[in-house]
Image (cartoon, rainbow, N blue to C red; front, side, top):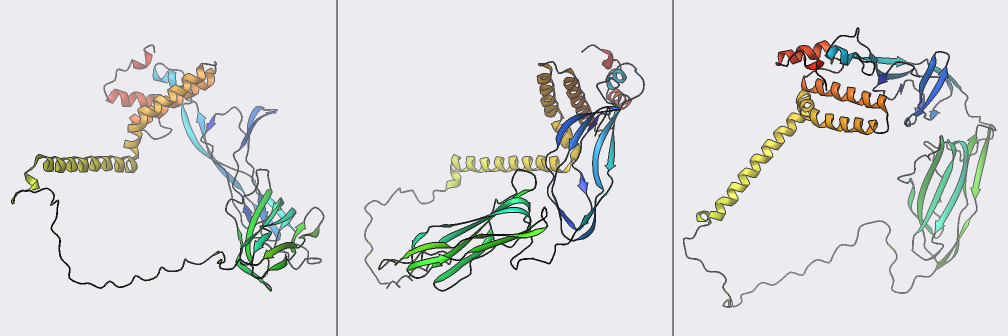
Length: 393
């Protein structure tokens, strides 16, 4: 919560501790809350915490960094008057705020009633099984898709699999599919797995029933969802047709037959091509030297560009100095856009930030050191008149 103090550069909080897994923090929700001390701006960071062991867990403390704006003293004239204006902070101070730790008492999962196929899912889930195609020829692959979705944790869950059997060959074990991420709603998870099987004989064949078990913390009991058998209609493979290849490399090409070398007549050329006198050399042509000069100029341009790129990446001060003008123009354009609907507070804040960043980059000042007296001293050393700050804009 932030009150009447201006802050900026708010970082995402970090939560210390062990014995639990923490999902990535979502983008914070912003709202305003009225308190006895006045209105406060509230930022809510949401995530999902999953305990990895039973017992007492200490979560946190959470730490977050931010910058606080501190006003300068007095009114003054010129630059002093500008930097001490109510819309412009005089100095930035870096702060680290820390929360109180949170203690959780995690109960162990009960042993009574635990299914043999339980693999660690905790929550409330639905279980769905699909297979396609259902009408195939012997030797063709069938893809079985398993989906578990619901509220809770599916981390490190082992999915049920179809075992190989009489006339049924398993090509690939179940694998977590790319893109199977938790749903948008908080603590709602979804995992999709696939398994490829191949029926090897014709006739009617049933894929065995599959079960998925989890622990429901709301009822304190284990629950199991099962999917019935899936019938397959397998027709004989047509004579002469090859079975589908699911895995493995393609067969090698047949080796080329060795060619018997011999002696033959060399025919006279009907079109001998362009003839040139003996002793002609390309380096005597203007085009040859123009091509060499072009290559040299291109090499020089690449060297200059690479040196500039290296300096921009290695010299932070030079990079700030070079980009200061462009970034200032972008910030002033944004301030102008904010002024059109009459948002004066946002306009002055944008102008102050643009001027502070520009002066800091051009005068090689660190963040937080752009103050009225500092700027005036640097400008005086560069020959700028002391009354520039008093001149009307």
